[in-house]
Amino acid sequence: MTLPAFETRRLMLRPIEESDAQGFHAAYGDAEAMRFWDVPPSADVAETADRIRQSLAIERRWHGMWAIVARSGGFAGMINYHNVDPRNRRLALGWIVVPAFWRQGLMTEAADVVLAHCFSAMDMHRIEALIEPENTASRGLATRLGFTQESDVMRDRLLVDGQYRGVLMYSLLKADWAG
Image 1 (cartoon, one colour):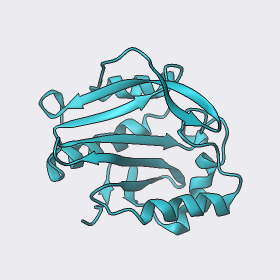
Image 2 (cartoon, one colour; image 1 turned 180 degrees about the vertical axis):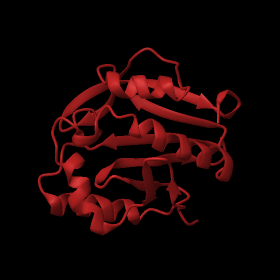
Image 3 (tube, helix red, strand yellow; image 1 turned 135 degrees about the horizontal axis):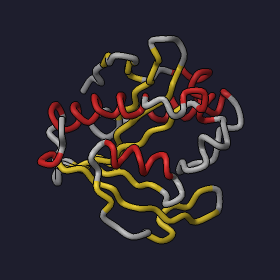
Image 4 (tube, one colour; image 1 turned 45 degrees about the vertical axis):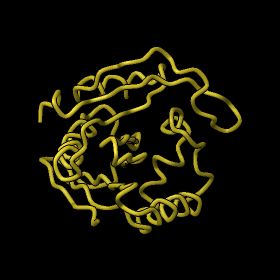
C-alpha cells in the first residue's frame, strides 16, 4: 500500500522521508513537544533519522507516517496511524507539532484529511487516540475532531523512560465522523 499525499488550504502532507530528520527534530528533539509522547526526546538529529528509518521499515498496512509541511514554509509536524487491527477495522492515530507552529489549528486541518483517508480508503470503523490526562492541547484537538473520551485514566498504560504513565482512551467511530 502506498501512502498518499494530501494538500489542504495551509498544509501539504506527504509520506515522511529520511531527509525530513532535521525538520522533524524540531519536534522530536524538543523536551516540551515530546513531554506527552511515548518515547523520550531524540538526543540528536541522527537519532531522529533512526526513528524515521524504523517507521519507514514497517509495512504501510500497519503504520503510516506523514510529514506536515506548512505552505508558508517549514516542517510543522507529523501525524501517523499505527496499531492497525484489520479484523476489527480499528487503528490508532498519533500526532506531534513543532513548537513554532503550536496553537495555529494546523493539526486540526491535517487530521481532517488523515481521518478521511483512514475511514474511506482504509475502510476503518474505529479510530483511537491514547492521550495523557495533562495533555490538554491533544485532548482539545481530539474533541474538536469529534472523538469521545470513553475511559477514566487507564493507569500505568505506558512505560516511558522508566516511568509509568496513565492515559485516557478517545475514539471516533465512522458513523459519528462529521467528514
